[in-house]
Length: 381
Ligand SMILES: Nc1ncnc2c1ncn2[C@@H]1O[C@H](COP(=O)(O)OP(=O)(O)OP(=O)(O)O)[C@@H](O)[C@H]1O
Image 1 (spheres, protein in one colour):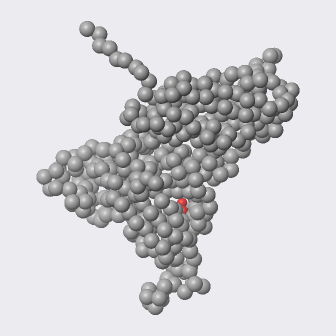
Image 2 (cartoon, rainbow, N blue to C red):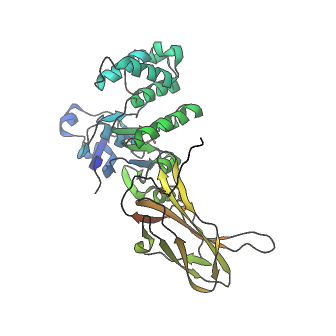
Image 3 (cartoon, helix red, strand yellow):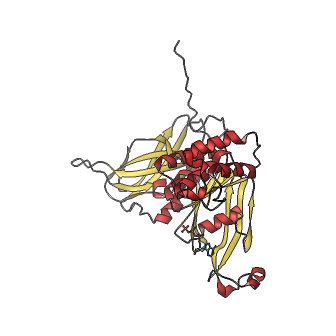
């Protein structure tokens, strides 16, 4: 198993129903009839180098979970363990003294993280630039708009690399220009090997950043697994009917191959009507902050005519993919109608439907990335 950055073990958090509790409850805990459970026995593991997404509707318990991980709340049950230093990007505007100016806040932040005094001025300049606060950087934070303080906190929290980021809707603050900059910086930090927990309503951010995610509802984890399937469940996405032709579930060994070797992927399909079918395959890799990007994409090919069972094969010479797990999408369509040219989707397995297949490439990691093609560069004299 890969190394772990965050371990959340059956964590529970209660709040008083009335918002007020007696002195005794401070020592004995809130009596069961006067409390409600905001986080209910949640367990979750974030592997090093990955961001796990937590989706959920308002009041599901996401922010409370993040605060438990960040140490702002202590759990009433269970435990949290972190391996690595932590940057809290959560609760924008909720940390720091708003009587400070932006510049004073930046210096304090760097002090807090033990940054050497000699290095601080250059990093504070970077925070000033990144936040685009201009002259406001020397005004008190309490005079800032919500967006301005969000920019300051984001710029400070990401100015120096941390090992663990707790991200709460951060990538949806600011205008589009600032969001794009924030994404670029987050990608850079994560590509450098950082890990994190992202809590959000924004399922597209989860698709772009997280291989794994969870959905919380009423304090509990109600869906867990690969992000594509979790997001599809969260959105309750409709799937193709697959009632005229369908792909039969390939056994996992049918979707394994060795890097650099010729490979044949077999797909069994069942066609229930006298129709001609066509198939296409796309193999995608998760690019942090970008999403699933195709690295091999076939055209639609004739796959035979029904009714009956058909086997189709895809041959890839000298598989140009490094070892790892890829998402494989398989599409089964009708042949174009000779009169109208229209095509019907008969069946699909794809991360966009939340049911993508896993394609595993084995072999030695040559460090050549996902597509170690034998390319050659030359220089014009
Ligand atoms: N400090 C607190 N005291 C009392 N109740 C709280 C406190 N913090 C959160 N709650 C309650 O706990 C529940 C979970 O809140 P939480 O903020 O974790 O949800 P969330 O999933 O982050 O919601 P949102 O998406 O709206 O931010 C809500 O019912 C909320 O009202």
